Image: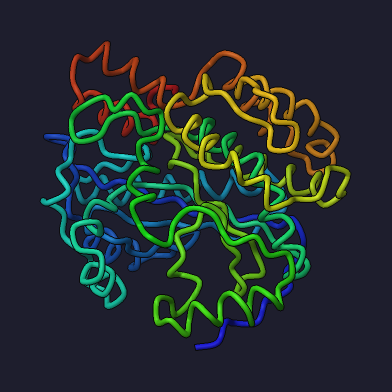
Length: 376
């Protein structure tokens, strides 16, 4: 099937997708409740979109298209409230977090949908191990070539989003020592990682994608699990490296950070992206996953080693005029506080584990964060 034409979108629009955990509030293990949750939410008017994900213990919700932080956050609040109300009726807890701290992958059930069954048949146990939870952010692009420019120009900033969103330190009952263990599960898929370095859509569509389709390996862009991928049917690029945060406030802030970065990068005042930028890509990605805000970053152009936390703070300062133009200062201020001292949600979950003495308390804290009963 030929690749869909790239649909030109309004530049710098944004939309958010959140994969959420469905939890049994008695034992705090995952609950195979997606079918019941989707049925209940479908009986009313949900203030966004909701659909199933790979296994029965997760759902994905998505916002409308937005341009401003305040409107995006208002919709996320409405969605959160509707989800909590539905969960209360079904006796199901909902929460963010990139991984569930102690679920066993072999207990999970693949959601009964043809695409998910096809993936399960192809990837075997990896499909059930894909019971991990991420935030995806879409940014509208005025043209296909603009989308590819942004996709590659953003490679230098990918570690920022990993470290700021990290909320998956625990997996299979243990502290992994990673701030984001979720991305290790994603990286197991053969079509994950980075997109090929192409800056012209014609070369991407008629060269790379056509060749990949001819091999039979891919049928559509959905078959690529890249850290950032173009979505031609929406006219967007889609950032996929973020763990699902514990709060919708953090989710909105991350989306606005990406929006402001794209606005800056479209000025093209930075050196243009180059293939050699990717020489340090996997190293920088690992540092952000493993150490979070305490990681180190190798600048792809200068090869200078930088503390990731300081690079984030410097970038946030640089983005101040763009945040002002986009009315997103409050969003970037939140991320400044995270990087300057509060720490990410992985740090919060580790503190909860130390205080509660077990992984069940970690899940309880995540549920209460989503309900805004405790501050993360």
